[in-house]
Image (cartoon, rainbow, N blue to C red; front, side, top):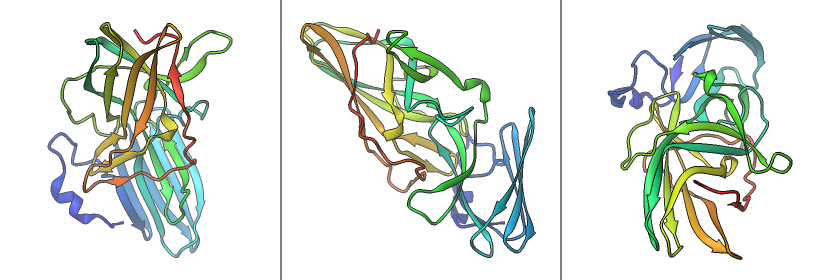
Length: 262
């Protein structure tokens, strides 16, 4: 196995288990093994144009036969959006803050949260990449919640997260950090206890074993006598990082929290 980002190995964060595989692009000639929390992945050449793929965890083994277009298997191992496990059902994420964030009237602030990611293995080469496996290192984190009325509400992937006053590295392979910029345009203070947004329009960026989402802007205002919160994605790729491939085009969904945010 040959990594196309060998310089990464010299700069692994001290918070990362060095036995685990770093994110990046890899070329597999005949056999390769990837070690991740709770998962071991083995790729092995079967014929000139096919590889066997095996991923083993506490629940068993996933096996596939991969047909490749080039002499060697070139793949990208990356953090990806948390919408595929156990199956793709929604573009939305519901974050419940473990403690509310109070924002004074007519003011702005920012907080950081660590929200779940999933692991993706992609064939390289196309604008819209093809993945041959997506999984979560912590499957128990794959939960759903409903935001809004039972009949018309939004089904969302759900996670409870801790808001932090300053940026910290998220748990490698389990989470990516997200900066939330909150602007309160009301003449009264407000408490933010939940954040709902369409995560499909976000990019995830990675470096070594670290992952970060695009920023999220949350603007609280009054409309027709009702307090609402507009949520808008804001691109922010850190310098020197790479962006995970996309499987779907962006939707540019305009979403507003209208059913409360406390």
